[in-house]
Length: 376
Ligand SMILES: *Cc1c(COP(=O)(O)O)cnc(C)c1O
Image (cartoon, rainbow, N blue to C red; front, side):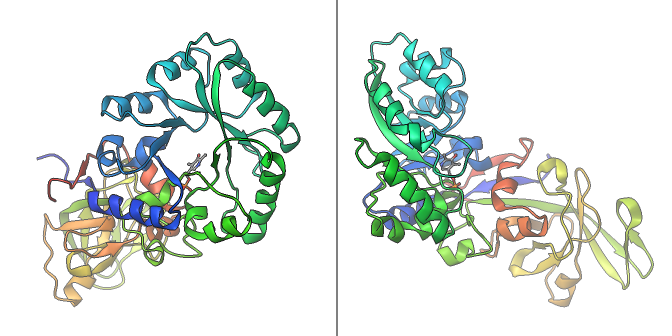
């Protein structure tokens, strides 16, 4: 038998989250963001459930090739554009739309020999100071690109640094409006946080977002968990990391558990050893308070350091609640247990000082992932 750790990708939850996003932005088209191997889900595991999106946005050409190989003929957007000239040929061949955010990319495009004009997303820096052109140069760059035969159509794009803050949003939106108000082209502004929380603000500001770009919300985690949990947004978890107990130890007062012998036992305890460690993507830095989910909704505290391939948990809550555990009992590290209880990835991430995005994306490639489309 192979190690029992695996991740299950929930088909219906992906569809539910996509529909929720579509209902928040009913007049917009949706780029389903599937960068980072669909936030650690596997592009092949989410593609079918997300086909209802209008396009897919990603970073790597290899991911774009995979998507075309899966049979997607619709729009594909490279969110960071191309990194070297020969990638433009692949854009022409695969019909990829690409972001243009720096001068070097314009020069590559100007030197690119193509019959077919490219669809580009011209990126404005609206205050995040990561990618994009300065607002004062934006119009002249648009004009220059508009006159190039390599360019068929220009859309206008920006990315918000702090979509949860109305004040920051108003500032970025006014920069965007000022720089683009007299330019033609579709607009693409909103990430998950904006789609979930700020569509009213956009419409009050008179901005129509033609192409929203949700990522994390599709995957059922919250863009800003301290503000509002995924559940409160109505999102459903799409990735469940599950493994099994592979050993049980009875320990007593004064015993120590795990590397470093830091965790000293203060009462009789049952320790469950779970086949999941930091080499699987479970955070080694997890702090006190972190729990795993057992069947029947029982939560057991993590006890002892996380090692490379294993972790240890306190099974006493199962004893106290009369829930049977043995070697082979399933443990849910995040997501949803088979009997329908939830442990939000954001909650686990919070105990490791990070966000659900990182845990899902950092799930190790050695953890097999499978869609539950054909039944769990
Ligand atoms: C990753 C990314 C998104 C999606 O962000 P979420 O917070 O996951 O919704 C949107 N736009 C761009 C440019 C991105 O790089």
